[in-house]
Amino acid sequence: EVLITTELGLLYPCASGGVRWCEVAFGPKAGLIVGYLGWIAGVANNATLPVLFLQYVLNQFYPHLYDDINGLLRYGILAGITLLLTIVNYRGVEIVGKVLVIVLFISMTPFLVMVIMGIPQVNTDRWLQTPNGETQTFNDDQFDLAQSGWFPQYVAGIA
Image (cartoon, rainbow, N blue to C red):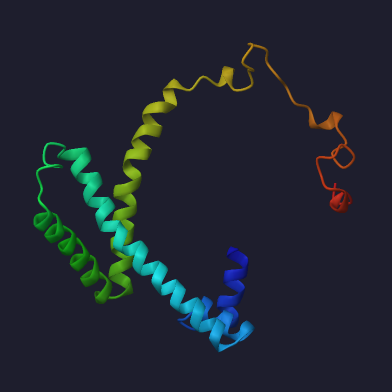
C-alpha cells in the first residue's frame, strides 16, 4: 500500500491525493464520492477523539470527578479541546507536525517505560518450550519448502 501511495503521489502531485487518483481512474463522479466519504469519515473520526481523550483522562486521573461532571461542563471541556486543536490546525502544517511529535512522545512514553521495566524479567530459555515442557527446534534445511506446501505452487520457482 505504501508503494502504491508513493507512486501515485509522485505521478499526480496535488493536494487532493486519493480523490485525484480515483477521478483520473473512474471519472469525476467517483472522485466526488471518494472525496465526500473521506470527508465524512474524517469528521466522524475527529469528533470522537476529544470525547475519548476526556473519558480516558477522567477515568485514569480523576475517577472521583467522572460522574460528577455535568453535561454543560463536559460540553465546554470538549469544545475547548476541539477549539484548541482547530487553532493548531489553522496555524499551518509545521505547527501540526510539531504538535504531533509532542503527542507521539507523550503517547509512547508509558509503553517505553513498561518495556524497559520488563526487559530484566524476560526468560529467553522458555521461548521455544511447548506447554508440556519439551523444547522444540526448527531446522528449515530439512524441509523442501517448495514441495511441502508452505509456498503456493505458483510461486514454487522462487524457492
